[in-house]
Length: 492
Image 1 (cartoon, rainbow, N blue to C red):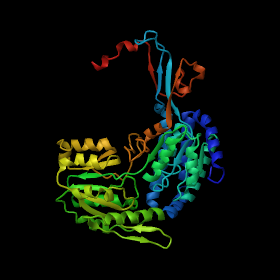
Image 2: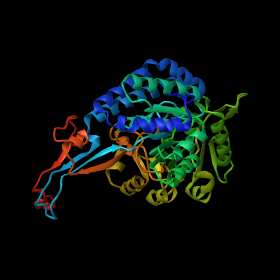
Image 3: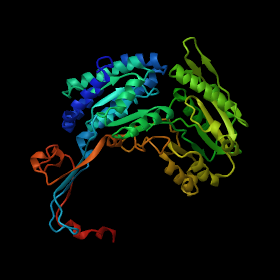
Image 4: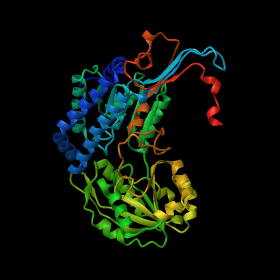
């Protein structure tokens, strides 16, 4: 559906009406529908990329890669649901001799939560937008999806939604399983609607927290998975020219408008940082996504540059054209640890755009405590160290501190690049997310599922994955009678 066809009440009603029928579709039927969506998006790729370039200012190569990621993510989810392991089907057969009292027949699986409201992101017009990860995971789970389009790419959102809805319809999915709305007022009205059973969001901390509070304050609160902000610190034991070049490239990619951009790089205090200016100076200007993001970046850049005791390594340039669009080149500054702590209010906030802070440290042993005090929740944290330093165990305390506060810990490389794989974790403790789950990778499907147990149910009334004949051929974890007498034996 496009956002012009129905009122908010109509949209919620259609999503709710589609819920049970969509949940009952078999994994193969739903998987085939996801593949059909991917094929349709690929077929329209040239048209969609041209629209996205015009509306966002992002380059063709970047957008082509992002669209490919989006469509193959849909195919990955298709295989995930056909496999069936995600349902976590458990069957406890009756056991009159169960050690803590007779056990009834209990069968449990994960089932769809119901209609999901997805607030699309601005910085990934494909991968975290209309047909992006949150929508793909919810559809794979068997949940109808309503997408609140981002105002930064309205034409692309409408065209993408039309393609997705058409492909799902042609694949035989229920009417109302995928819809689009636009406007903040419509989005918040739907979030308050009792027919919406979960929410997902990628965007600013301010807006994400506001939406999370709405979801929590409803008469019936619902889960809300908001990805808010992250500064993604990097800790390096050395800083040669190659490392600094890689850092600048990561900071400036897509004009620094990535949730995994390294906002802070910690280096030994004796490091020569002169290569930063040359690397940053070689980066051409890049348009920011929209005028609002441009204005926010200009203000944030001024706050950092005007902070006391900041050394400017690359001032960068900012240009605003007649249409209000902002173009920027990288700004990089350096501080010592004491300055970072003393001016934390001015320096620690995320800078959404091509700006980053290099921090000189004197004592490597102090980094774990420093990290814990400054960065309570991040999508990523990174260690850049030589092989012998990684092998000798001297960084174990730092790694422990990063793992406690981050969703993904990298060793070498840069965090701007999130592989769509079964093992990926793209989340983290607050304030990186409102709920620490992953929005990338196949584990993302679990956000839109809930456990239901059936006790002493007749076979005819059980969901297909819990029946003895197992018509969907999904993995079943079965507990046979008599097993309780051996509890504890594996721990001896």
